[in-house]
Amino acid sequence: MIRPGEPWGETGTPPPAAPTVRNEAALGDLWERGGREAVLQSGTLRAVTGSAEGPNRVCAPVDVVVVEWTGPDGPVRRPLFGSMAVCSAPLGVRLDAIVTNSGFWRGRRAVPAAHPNDGILDVLELSRDMAVAQRWLAWRRSARLDHLPHPGLTVHRGRDWTWSGGPCTVWIDGRRSGRAHRITCSVIPDAMRIWL
Image (cartoon, rainbow, N blue to C red; front, side, top):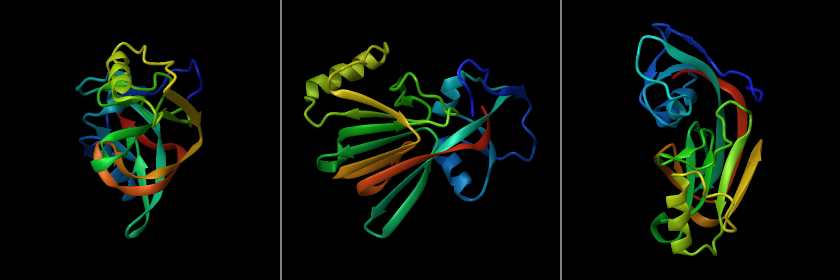
């Protein structure tokens, strides 16, 4: 787990045995199968370091956020490495919260203080009373990182987080993962070594 002001990761060459995954969703699949080291081709974790393709890469430990809810078929448990969106309203189109390990969501730095190896999950919650025009304005301002503070946006930082409401649609690392009324999230520090 990184401490404020400390450098993160080391430069090196990935071992030949390390599997290559294309994004955070595939990284989550690998983690569920017991994988604890991987080469990541793209995704928000790479955006954190600004890593580029090449023989030498940054190898760094990353946390995993474990997301749990009860769906129509029973309990669900999924790993989160990048970001998760909690969406309600018809067809899941209204964004209620972003849970992030990387700080990024849809190419924007949604939570600037987030770091994928600080042992903390970061949550940006949107007030249900926030008008569509205000949501759009906040989205536009997020490109300049001046969307915070906003009275309809709240940032939570901690080792766990619980949401209830809904029903909502859960999107984990860009993949629709199910429907839920109550979601709990917790952090496992240093869950994997990732070559970025």
